[in-house]
Amino acid sequence: MATGDNYTCTLSEEQLRVSKEELNEDPETRAIEVKTLRQRLDKYPGLTARTDTSFLLRFLRARKFSQEETFELVINYYTARKEEPEIFRDLRPQCVRHVFESGYTTPLGIKDKLGATVILERPGKWEFGRFSEMDLIKADCITIAKIIQDEWVQVHGITLLLDYDGFTLSHFTHTSPSFAKRIAKLWQVTDGSFLVKL
Figure 1 (cartoon, rainbow, N blue to C red):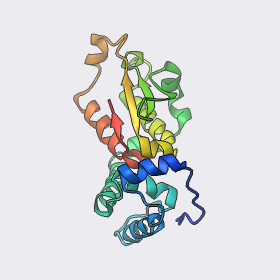
Figure 2 (tube, rainbow, N blue to C red; figure 1 turned 90 degrees about the vertical axis):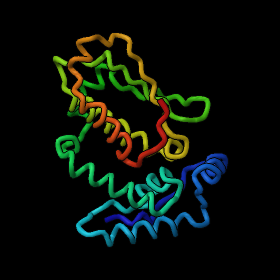
Figure 3 (cartoon, rainbow, N blue to C red; figure 1 turned 60 degrees about the vertical axis):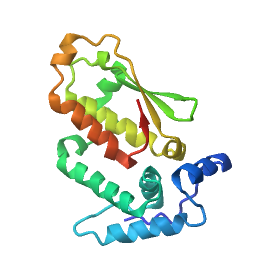
């Protein structure tokens, strides 16, 4: 398992200031925080976790460098992956290319006024005769996993913009009660549980 010895922070001086003020990140103690979390995870029975610095920092930032809350979040992340094998098995963009091509979920490549990265979701683009709820969930997971690699996003979060144009009663009736709950859970634990604003 990787130890993250080659980590280089990509945050600007201004982003570091924001991260220090809002997320309690201190460049002087960052390595110690990561090492402490890594050691705790290494001791957790039966867990084979990624422990490279870049990966663990996502979780530390998501929980404002609280060791207890971060540790719990990492465990929840791996628990979700174990409990949802149908989602995480073979989770590759090409498997749900049809969802991305439909325009259902689209990172807009822009930031809101507070610096959060904007993702546009258009439930009305769901072609339920062509792809399933599971495909939608997988597309969301892939989108999050990609975007959250950016340290800017880890600090400033994500704004989820929902456009219900074209959403019909048929879409509603094809949505199972568990779908929203599953989506919400996965948005919370997928690759770091960052700040999401709706």
